[in-house]
Structures are given as structure tokens and as C-alpha cells.
Length: 521
Image (tube, rainbow, N blue to C red; front, side, top):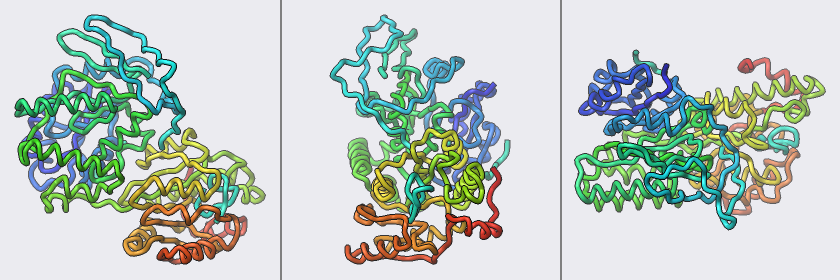
């Protein structure tokens, strides 16, 4: 029975794809091999086909390809393997032990410690089953689970209104010694992790680089794709998979995963190619990678960083360029708390069912959005529907924060330094085409808004976060759009306005749904 899915993103890897997949063949049946081709122009796909359980065609982009493979996977554990990386002998046994495959699945917590607890030192030969208790002075704090409608009224959006063939188709740490020199650092009830890494061909300086990568990863909980990140499928789905960005997707995923659990760091090391280090020189490559990482932490867009990383402009140009992320505000579908203005016409259950349909409709209407999509949930991300939607639609879940609608929108947009578009769920006419027009307008305007017929707006986008648009605003009236125009004009901000659309708020709006095909529940 398949318990492990190995997802291998490839693009023009004909020189080594067969060698990469050959060591996995003996384990077929216990694991499945999923190769995701991002538009190879050589014979990578032909070589991979007999060695893979699935060969999937995808648009290029490593994050996008890995998400496409995960969507088709059958295993309870996902392992993402680069084509130039070779796993160590016995890796499947290490994974079983680290993730306790066969034992009951751990419960995914919604609280995590902001400050990671470093592993205690356990002398070789001593085995400990108990996690060390944190010292009294160790800071513990509640971390919101990572993962309304922008013109919304009190009843709708988080508490405020208004405004085998090609298919074309996401606590303490213990150091536990083991035999034969193999061991791993096991995060208690591990849910994800990575392998130590070494380079081939190697050299003394590359051995030092590998050691530093492994130690840094242990200390920070941040892992790279070269280390073969693995994760329980249910956790990967809950988080919405990899962010659809052109670079740093492994770092971004690690940041979200470590909020839930520390990674299991497995040894012996896997082997990965040192070709990118040898191409430009070790020290130059080290400097470049740290410079790119520092810029990423500072909020520089991955689209800008990818050109620095590849250097070869033709290669960078062949990668997908993402648009700004799309933020979708939603509220947990609980009868009596959503679409309350429609309850006199539909009843509490009927209004809730319609709300769920509108949410699904919004996701379908934007399913081909070329950038990342985030579902911002209220009051939190715990409703089962949110986890299911994240898995089915490759969404990243976030929790709404703030005391009122304006502060929630300002906080959500502030999380995206290079700008974002924000929508709700009650405009049936919203679509990727409409939103892309707004996204393009943000190349030359500070703010883009799609007004609604009743004086609010169904979408707001910002080129850069600007909370002044929302602070102190009054919502739930027919002058929200007019007030917003006035604020932007007073602040000297340029505004693009799209065509006015209608939204569904009142019983008199219901007949207009006759022309809309909503998805069944």
C-alpha cells in the first residue's frame, strides 16, 4: 500500500532524470513516484515515463509544479525531491520512524511557541523518550494559526458590512542516537522535516558549506529544497501547499510549517549536485544566496530576486512571473451569522447555504489567478470547510486580525509588501479577467478599486500597503466609495476605478441570481 508520494519537479533534466529515479524503483508499491514536467524541450518526459507512476504536465515554476504533483498524490506523506538529488539508502525507514507511520496521526495544533525550544544535549548512547520541559523563563506565547467582505456590512464578512500517462491536469526536540551511525533529530510527534545534505562532487570548502547549511537549519527550523522537504499530507493541504512564487518557495513554506512544529532533521545525508556552486564559484555563490535571502526577509518580491539568482536572463525570463496575490475575505459558514439580511427571505440555514455557494463560486471564478491566493478567515481558520477548500483550491489560509473591517483589511494588505488585491465573496460577477485588469492598473496607480452599485466596492488593490485608506473609516453606508475617493485625493494617491458591479446583500438582489450558475454544495 502506498504511504509515501515522491514528487519530482523537472524541466530539461534529460541528462540525469533516469539516474535520479532509478534508486526509487525497488520501492514502487510502497511509494509512488510523481514526475511533474514544467515544459521541457528535451526528452526528459520520455525518459521519466517508464520510471514514474504519474507523469504530469504543468506550467513552469517549481512551486507550481510541486503543488500540481501533490494534488495528484495518494500517499499520507509527501516528499519533494529535486532531480539532481539522491536520497540515502534506507531513507524510507528513517521517514517511517521520524513520522511514526503506522501510529495514530498527530493532532495539528493551532498554538505554537514563537521562540523555538533548542534541543537538549543527550550524550551518545543514551536514549530519551521524554521531551525536556521548558525552563520557567522561556517565553511562550499564542501564535495565530497561519493561514467579510471588503465592503461588507455587519452581517457578512467577518463582522462588518459595507462597504501512467501525461495528465494535464499541495515542543522540545530530542537527539536520538541509532545504530550504524544513523540518527535523526526528531521533533516530538513530527509532522514534517528534511534530510542533512552533502555535495557531489565535493571539496573541503563544500563540506564546510554543507555542514553550515545543516546546522543553520537545525537552529532556525528553516529548510531548503535541496534537503528534500517532507511533510504529512494533511498538514500540507491545510496550509495550502507551496506559495506560487518564482523563488524562495521552500523558505516560505518552512516559515509556516515551523509555527506548527519543529522539523525532523534526518541523517545520514542525502547527496545533491554541486553544479550551481561550481558554476560561479563557492564564495560568490554563498554571497549571492545570502544577499538574496536578506532581500527576501526585507520584503523584496521573488520576481525580482529570481533574475539575480539565475543571472542568465533568458533562463529567468522562461520562468512564470506571478502577479500580486489575491486575498479573499471569508467568514465561517455558521447559520445565523452569515448573510443575515437574507434570513427573512431564505431562513438561517438557507442564507448560510447560499453564502457557501457564493464562496465556492468566488473560488471557481478566480481558480486561474496566476499568482497566489490567500483565504483570510474569520473568526479563525478552524472551520472544517476552510481546510477542505485550502486543499482543493491550493489556498493559503490566514486569520483575519483587527477590531473592525478597516483594521482587518489594513492588516491583511500590510502582510504583502509588494501589494495585493482584496475581495469578498458576494459579487457573483468577479472573475480573474476583471481582477487582472485591476492588477495591471496598479503598475501605474497607487490604488485600484472596483465599485459596487450600492455605493461601496467589491475589490480594492494597493501597489504598496497604505493603512490610511482604512483607519477611522465609517462603513455600512452608501458613501463608502465616495469617502474613499476623498481620502485618496487628499493623500495625493492615484486611483484607478473599474466598471461598477453589483453584489448580493438584500432580498431584492436574489432575482439577479437567476442568470448566475452557482456551484452545488
